[in-house]
Image 1 (cartoon, one colour):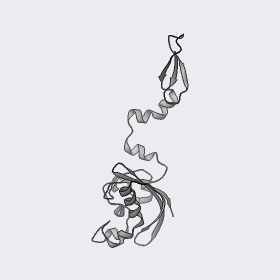
Image 2: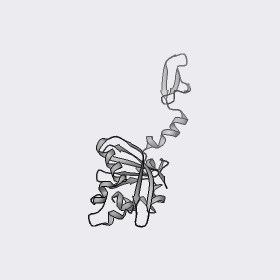
Image 3: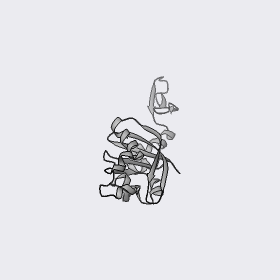
Image 4: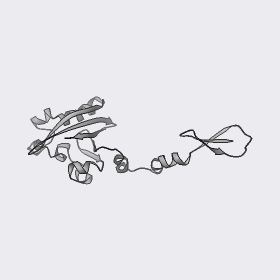
Length: 162
C-alpha cells in the first residue's frame, strides 16, 4: 500500500500489504517540522513573534491585549509593560495625558491612528497601508499601519516608521 503525506501529497513510502494498490496517509518529516509548533501548541507570544513587522493587538476600547517582540524596539518598553494600556498611553501621545485621557479628548476625534483602528473594529473591513501621524511631546512621527479585525480584537501592523 502506498503512503502519501496528507499535507504536501509527497509519497512517503509503502507499507504492507505491498500488492494493495490503495493509498494510506501520514505526515512526512518536512511537514511535521513545519507544523510541529501548531501540533504541540504554540503560545500567543511565539505566534506573534513570527510576524516580521511590529504588531499590536487591541480590544474594542483600544487597550493592548498582545504585542510581538518587535514592538519593544519602537516603544522602548517591554510588551509586558504595555499590556492593558490604551494605545495613546503606550505611544506616548501628547493628548493621552490630558485629564480626559486617551480616546476621550477633542483631539482624538481627528486621530488618524485611532480612526484607522476603530474603522476596522466597527466595519470588520481591513484598513491597509494607511499613513498616520503620532503626536508626541516634542515631535510628530509618521507611520504606515494596517489593521484587521480578528474576532473581537484588531491586529495593528506597523509597516513603516519615518
